[in-house]
Length: 227
Length: 227
Image (cartoon, rainbow over all chains, first blue to last red; front, side):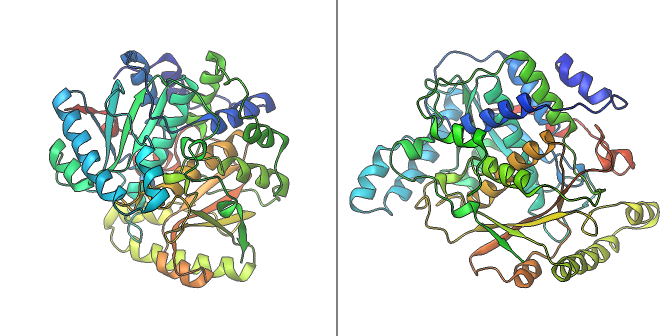
């Protein structure tokens, strides 16, 4: 395993004094959260493998139910396999497009929803629903907590990647069972996400779907009910 | 909506130059990721409402499929409702405990898996599976992408909370349908997570389940297959 000095230090320094995160760091973290984007427009130039390894080391420190670490990475490298995944996207996207009518359908057809043709690194993320690690703690009444552990890991990776200037795009317009079959993963692995990773062509603070007038941000998720 | 100056700036500064995240920030972010913990031991003292509002503003900037922002927050405040949730946990935990045998069962009984009795703020998080926002983009072939959007928001909140010194604990040992019934949420809301939030009694770099010899970290999720 290729660990950066930083993450090596973090993992082994169990007796170190807890770090303080000061106001300037908190403000910069807020900027990072604000400027993280779902990227679909990538430059074609390579990403240093060492940078990817460093991000995977960090992502490995993400929370997981029962410390199960159920995420499983498949790096999709070959042109043939990328073509297979892209065909899955095209078919799934045609089906989705057919559900819209009129101006909405025209707008949908113009949206750019993935960067599979260009992104230099591409990963399919799975959850090993059959893992013994964690011995089932926390996922007996909610087995989906295992899937959610993969998702929290993805957001950890996403923010760390953005801090390094890298763009990440999450493609969910795929037939998940077809991805599992095409990538020939073990029976117990459930497909969670397909990530395109690379240097972004542009940087924006507003999401692509806001900028292209598909969906504004609203306060729907900001309202807090009390009980 | 009570927005901090920071997030106000972030949301409106659409024409601002993209920020640079330098090596010292990246190193501090790595420390944040390493020192984020699932916290179950809380001090009882209150958390300033303004801090919670600021964290909710930031979490609102999390990614979501189709910009659907499907997360729904319920703040569980009353002693009676907390008792109801805790009873759900106790029953679910008894069922889970009964599946272990011997030394594993003894160890399980000693684990501290939640802080519902003490945590000053408690939130149930739901996914509105019936939301119109986003008009279905990205969740037709994988409807679970809506649930995953709530989870990426939770990790965003979690890291921002840790940077402010706040502990977050995710309780998944609950009957999810019972939580929905007890909190009397709309039919289309699916329970995702129960979060305890407050000032932590202790800070650790190693997860509680590692420290208490339930489950070590392994390299299982660090291996990358290629296709």
